[in-house]
Length: 222
Image (cartoon, rainbow, N blue to C red; front, side):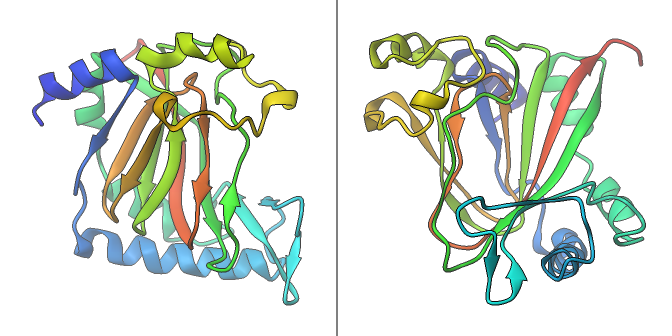
């Protein structure tokens, strides 16, 4: 797709893919570094982690959901430089028609290959719409299952007692929505998924996953 097609898809659905944006060689170093970060974190050598509430430990290791501050040089001195090399900023700014953006969140997500993951339905922004905030997911492994209620179907949520604009409703966190109302995301290693932060979505994966999850917020200064 060209830039205009991606922009039109974003305006209609609230998300788009950048397919095969990175090749194998570009991802080799960051994949090895990320594996190292995850091993350290599982052993309790990094305290800024997220764990699965139901099973916080497996086989003597921490059952990781995510690692916060993965670019911190005290965790691995190489990560920041390698992430900088994965430069997709110019294209994102062009598609979004932004001058610049800030990045207040970077997290390395994972789960064990024997742990089927299903998260809650939620929005990453406090409300919807959120045109000045996007999520970027950089895939280091093939992954299928992430669910998004696209922009053009958000209004249908009211038929299932789910707010069309609030961040989350604990009573509907695991609502069984019909497949017709959400899109199932299938991405390959090297793909990037971009979606509006306020879109309702649910993490879902039936095998091991490793991806970087970032939040970018529109910033007017050059």
